[in-house]
Length: 393
Image (tube, rainbow, N blue to C red; front, side, top):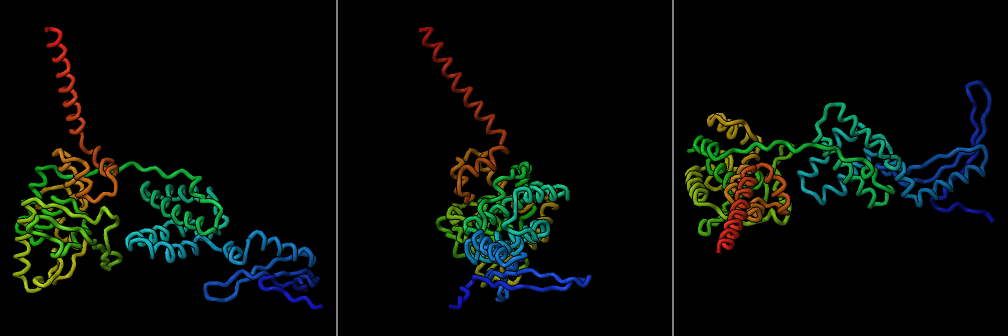
């Protein structure tokens, strides 16, 4: 009986080639189906040997090592191709647009140019370590190398869960170390100078709210009038607005803790009332749903505010040029210095864990250490006096 080939079994044929010197070479060639390419066309892997038996054995080993047809295709997958698939299938549907944008640029600028041509199945810890070393030689910062590490580790962790690799090479490489950058915050006098310079400014309420609540810039820009309860003197953080590649993106807060209620001091409530009054008097802004809008009533862009409003205010107040985000650090630092419980500060900032709040801000408050030592002095002094009184009695 004639034997028909099974699907994916491959084909074997005898090949006759004429060399440049005129001699003839004869050998056997086998081709195994390896799924389809991105354009839909069939992909095949070719193996060669002097005899048909050897070709058949090579084809069998290839299928056995791969496990199935899909795995044969995986063996040809490069890091560049896999990263594109990971970004499209795993990151974009599940992560915030800002996170996808960060991973995309880290891969495009730093991962793909170095190891993009390496096959995923052949990637080793040595490849990863060489990547980090190359970035260091190119003068890239330790923080950037950490971002490259976390991006690649997350991507390869997904490849491990998808069954494309047997282990994550990043787990065998030490994470690049980076010292925590020195935090620049404003003290009470500098805050007063900034607010004095902002008095009468179109966005005065924005700076008062930033310093009194510690909201992130995207959370401030995402506030709508429906989020403010003037009677209860509070606001709700329900969305964030960020600028990505020139486009504005509105999304929910990053974590459950980020969706929160924040009580307002009287100064912030008064500033918002005055701001609302000015907006209603402006025809272009009167109908805007955004608390802080541009001159046409549309949402604010962080790049414009930083360049056209915040930087000039710092210059007018004769203050060092800090980031807008440092107003958030300033708010947290002033609260902790005033003795507000770290748990309350965590809830106002929207940190997922109180450990994050303490880790970020405790080192910037040397006076807390002094206060702790002074309180211990009072305890020991009280105990010593108590012993002296009992001894005298």
